[in-house]
Length: 278
Image (cartoon, rainbow, N blue to C red):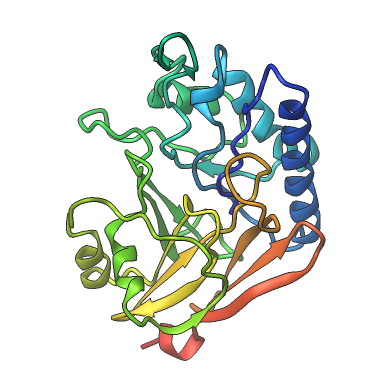
């Protein structure tokens, strides 16, 4: 999972393209380290910083997907949107900051993503306002086109705040491991997401947005995990990396963070084989 890449910052400054090149380097390094057994890349939101992109945000979208497309052909990826991806362009002017309409809305960004053959991204239902709400069925390793072994749900944040399930992580989660150096910014209202996750047997939830967190903790039987700040855009100077999730054929779920330099941190078993089998 790559989270918070923030391509497109400082596009008129020398440091902007250099920062994006560093983010591309992170992707290539992590993908190369994890290539054996890798089945899906998840782009966890805030891949571009729309409020810094004056025009043609799709060009930055194409740039952040280029490492997978160019160097790992045949490897599918799936994208979910964060708050910055379609944020309106902002600039300092006299006498105050001015804002212009976003260059591409959420559905247009996803449609751009779907141009590529290896994109597993889906457009969410037209009847709701959030574009990247969808699910992907996952078959077994031996029969990938057969009946799904599990479902991956992708939920559009809609406003850049972590789902309210993460307020639960403030209250002594069990099995806590990983880095917790940032605030948690939950949604303003409890919309029942955690209750649905718990009642329907969701085993783990993963989110980005808060760059200084990569921790996991179990609350009422549901694992809550942050990704890892992957890009050189956005705030914070924490080491860059990517959360990796391994789904075993026996139902076990393991996770770790692969750092840009190859180190592995924040690792643990979320669901054991015996737990998965009931």
